[in-house]
Image 1 (cartoon, one colour):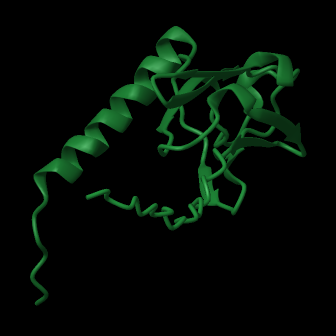
Image 2 (cartoon, rainbow, N blue to C red):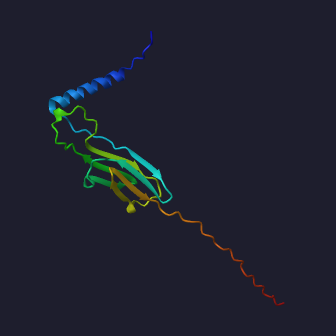
Image 3 (tube, rainbow, N blue to C red):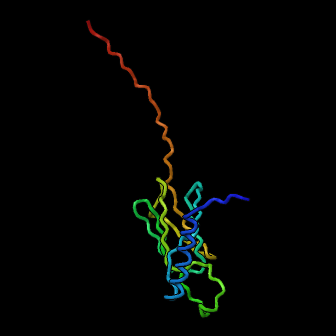
Amino acid sequence: MAIIRWEPFREMSTLQGRMDRLFDQVWGGRQESWLPAVDVFDTKESVVLKAEIAGMDPDDIQIEVEDNVLTIKGERKFEEQVDEERYYRVERRFGSFQRSLALPQGVKADDIVAAYEDGILTVTVPKVEEEKPKKIEVKAAKKTVEAKKA
């Protein structure tokens, strides 16, 4: 006989899922928030964020920067023309979302560029150019010798 570990929180999660489905059936669904998947990577010139937000109109996406925190907001609407009762399964997430990411020091927040193509939002945050060490030439001071009169 195998020993099965009892996980009370898994049962609570299952109960919550059942209650959610019950409320969806009684009140016709709800809009819930969701978070898009985001990749963040570094290049020599910039920090790049790629967010997966397929099916959205670029006009419905807002990007803000405040106190070195980049925030992406938007809402994906459920606009299918099929009667909800005819769906077998709905796995895509709909509703509003907000994703905030702290930017590293040394970026130009005023020069951020965003592009949306094929369901991927690409936000490019340029870095501040690093100051290169400045060489300072050391000049020898000219010594003048004054003759002392006796």
